[in-house]
Image (cartoon, rainbow, N blue to C red; front, side):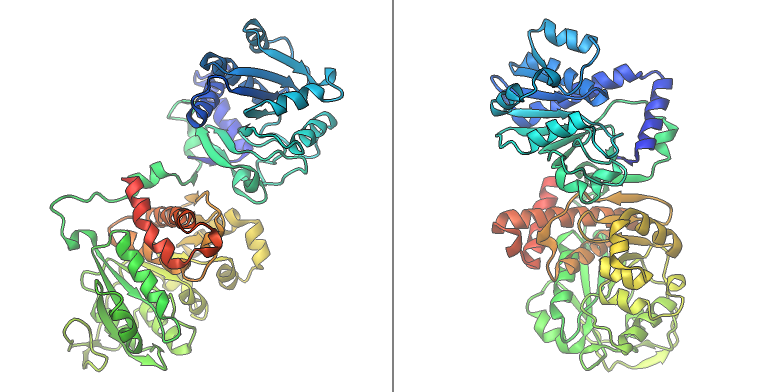
Length: 537
């Protein structure tokens, strides 16, 4: 699904109109699409009452077309006009079918509106469209306030956007009516995936207006919204003759004496998402705590300094990159200088020697050193403490391998950019796109409505805001998922998009299973990954 500004959508419509899909055709398809969404969610419709609150613009016309189609399903439909409309064919068609239509100026006391709201099952919000800018005109403000404060049992279906939202910046008027479902036409508007607007959107549905597939104005837009359909296409096939090597090896370099759980969660997540083999590179002292809980992993024990990864661990890791197809660095590291030096050696390739002697099943911490090493890293993901240490490395952005995935939350993004957190949050899309290009890497800006950006201009928003994921350890699960996807051969940007979407859906599943988002633990999210994959097929 494309994510567009208002002007971009206008250009798409203009080009489509010039290529034979007229505005009238688009309007007809929009209205029929809205009625199909209503039918899908509220079947059977026979006997249900649908009221449309109709403005003077195109959204109102879309709503009238939807009513005309819904009446064929046995609905009782009614149209309440905020402003007078010309006696167009849409109104005449409804009048010919015996539909009751009321003009707001003829209902000064709102008695008709009150009665209609009281008896409605579904309310179509066709008042204001994507071109809305504050302030509201008085006639709209009065009706929207009345609806907002009316305690009805109906579900609200917004046409393209809830009335009263600025679809470019996400600002919301005080009178905005909260939707249960927002039916976007052809593409999602950027303001809807911003706060505070997102709180009013409800479920997002998109109606395909069947525009020509060769529209240049649409091809130029690299912003998208993640969906189950596009994530499903990104998942690797799992042939019957596959072996563990088919699905790659993820090397998880994680953990410290204070943060053993981070390593465990990240490694488990990489396995859960389908990686063939997970190798855990951890400081030696935490091996005993983890090995019994994680029998599926293989182990690479690293030299440590007071329980954190020591700088000379880099040469051991470099020695053991055979068959590794993705690396995760950072979860649970701590921010000691010796670990920073380890990270610097890893990304710059400055190694003095490699190991020659190994133990059985894992590398011994006292293995011998005997020859110089120079190796190329597979794709890497840097998360958590790895990001905090990254900024201490001179010219770090120039040292990273191409297609590195950085996964900061807003606080970590502030450390990386030296920008205030509030500025980052106010301009999430612009910020992540700017720095992905500046650093030449893939950036995942976590949080409500996580954004993934690539240096080539691609950007994807995951349309989930879930407080269940505001919990320690869930970020480690996400980092493991993304690493596991890359390990299986998925391109890094696609892996980040698919990984964030799967993680977000797992958070929703976990919340539903335990009964409340406040009770969700990171392990609940981890265990829900399999259910998300099952739905994707």
